[in-house]
Image (tube, helix red, strand yellow):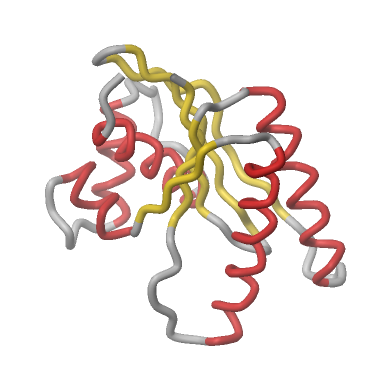
Length: 157
């Protein structure tokens, strides 16, 4: 089973693709999609949609796991993240890919076994679990891989 993890954002969206076969996990791809703040909101969302669609077409995941926006400190950042989530969900729907949502707390618990683990702890565990040479960079890509890895541990296949 191929699982896509997504850490949504308008400026930077992290993605990570893993393959789960029985008890083994393999990292297939990870990175970020960046948009230019000089572009209009519509153009940025269009770029995000097109890039996500290309990645979904290339890797053909059976499942997309996306970080859930469950609280916000600033409405100015919450709205663009919600808009980014919307175009990502649309891309998944058009490709008929099942979507699951996961909170950052669930990722921390699933990866580290501790809900107050910091980003560095999660990133180090993602590196170890996926047997990567280095911690995935940037943070958004590591977070996306973390979401995919966490969900892979919650399903049986």
